[in-house]
Image 1 (cartoon, rainbow, N blue to C red):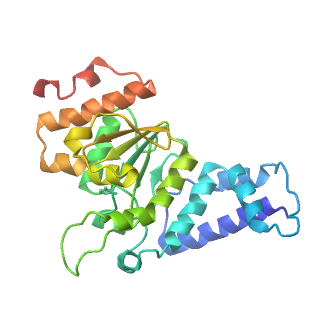
Image 2: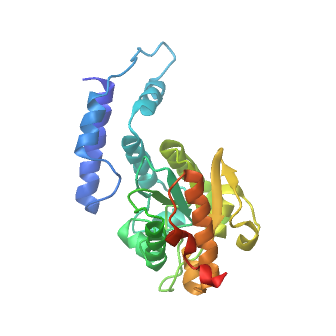
Length: 272
Ligand code: URA
């Protein structure tokens, strides 16, 4: 059996275990993609020379694996993570990310809240519903884009306390390597940072969102646009604020070369 086949079998086994433990999950990995993976010819499987150990082979193998499988492997690492013991003890589960591994557009939020912690998927609560509406208004679905957070665990709260808290800089710093790797695997053409905390996690800026929204930044050479977090719009749902987020999405659509209808250009215009 080739090492690639072994890796595929291992991955499949781990996904089976995970599904039986957690129910259906959305890693984007299907039986077909695993079969495709096991049929991928290995360009070169040289024997390790003395002093050279298996990890080099694994990293060769990693770069040849489809994005789905690389994301699934990364998700396994996230699930096992206990870098922040207080978060690991508090979480129901980690919340890795969802959407299209080939996405051109990736949204980055700050951290899972209570709903996401229970469901294991980012942006499924009220803020998530609004994000889905925004994505749909762009003519896309959640399956066209990729959605993840800087933090993969729900920030812990005192027992019985309602609501959610933003992640601390240290929590974000510890978790950022996972997001960085997700972005490296997905290679989106555009990143959108949802809210000041996500933007601070990605770039260390502490400028206010009103000062930076609608301005292009970069993260690892990928254009990065900060905009208001959907929960800000839930708190302050005036047409003026909605229009600002929508104008940011028009910038994203333009940069991606997406068609924009007159109707889309006009959304919330009466407010400006
Ligand atoms: N807010 C976030 O930033 N991320 C989520 O997943 C949900 C709410």
